[in-house]
Image 1: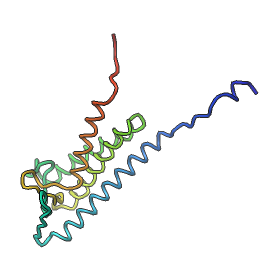
Image 2 (image 1 turned 45 degrees about the vertical axis):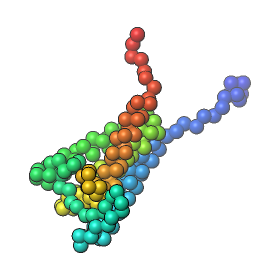
Image 3 (image 1 turned 30 degrees about the vertical axis):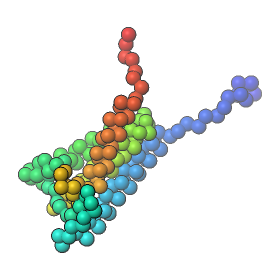
Image 4 (image 1 turned 120 degrees about the horizontal axis):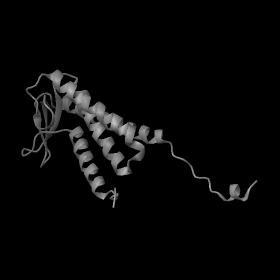
Length: 169
């Protein structure tokens, strides 16, 4: 046995599949949480009940469009097809990039994907996306929207914090 073999520390190699699996599991859990809260909101608020929580009211609304009701006048199949393609592209990018992402970027991607999938699955029900958080000064939104917005903010912060690489002198 050579001296080199006895002095080298064994460094475990992380599986790149682990990053992908964990990220997709988190996205699925977040989508599941969103869909659960939406089901509760529908069950509790379908009679028109509004609950005042101070700065936020809880009330039921269906959004047939996407962010801020954009595209609400489009045929539902167009909105479903467009959001489905965007989610497929986001999933492909996330799965292929996960091993190289920072923790912050993986958290952001899980939030984005979980929120997008939650709203997409909800949209397939036909009535539109269930929204229930109403402030009076901002469009009514839901937990998936919070996930997507937080994911975008974290991606921006991660990009700003990333070390700058020089491509040439």
